[in-house]
Amino acid sequence: PITHHPSPITHHPSPITHHPVSTLFVSDLHLCPERPAVTALFQRFLTDTASSASALYILGDLFEYWAGDDDLDDPHHAAVAAALAKTADTGTAIYLLHGNRDFLLGAGFARASRVNLLGDPTPIDLYRTPTLLSHGDTLCSDDRDYLALREKIRTPAWIAAFLAQPLAQRKAQIEQMRRHSEQEKQRKEYALMDANPEAVTTALRNHQCRRLIHGHTHRPARHFHDVDGQSCERWVLPAWEEDGGYLHCDAGGCNAVRIAG
Image 1 (spheres, rainbow, N blue to C red):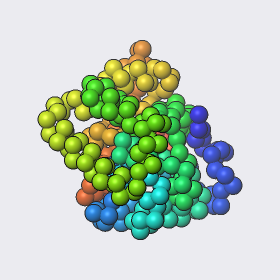
Image 2: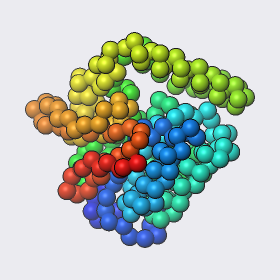
Image 3: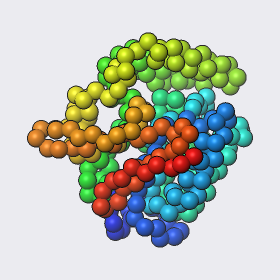
Image 4: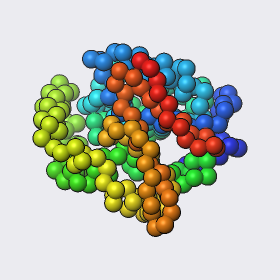
């Protein structure tokens, strides 16, 4: 597990500058050229806030979609990668979990942006509180149709076949999947697409964590769960729409922070 303690900062590879010890979490930015204001807001967040933190975790869906690392030539994607790399150059360690929209982010993007790719879920020691990080889609265990699709498109065979197609064809296929997904959301019950309490309890128990941080549901909140007689907290990160937001954690605990667009 990754450790975040007040001293020393063990996850920095030769930090350039000394930062206050704080760790930030974001998710569900859904960056795309069609939403330039959100991209600009994220770039300001990187410059004004994340560059002064010890670490930044992006818990999935950084992009609205990702068709493959050969799409890094796209000016929008290149600009986001450059902004992340610039923040990493200040000494902020940046970690990224895949979301359901950008699970094809690979080693090429990681090199260009200087982010560290993590598995889902990932347990960390966050200021001496065992904390589990996840995008959050696997916690929506009542949505069986979605989980079946997720399992199918995450197999190495499916990914290899998809990436073998021309980039334009991949983008067209993703657009079809996005339209189908939006139609499916319209017919699904609200609770079906939310985190299942039993799935949350099982995840916390299996990883022996007392805190869970995730996104995906676009329903920011702080929840409390009883796990085998122990009170555990769950932070749900906000989606970036007109405004943004992040979770700020340090030795004193965690606080949700809103960023006005």
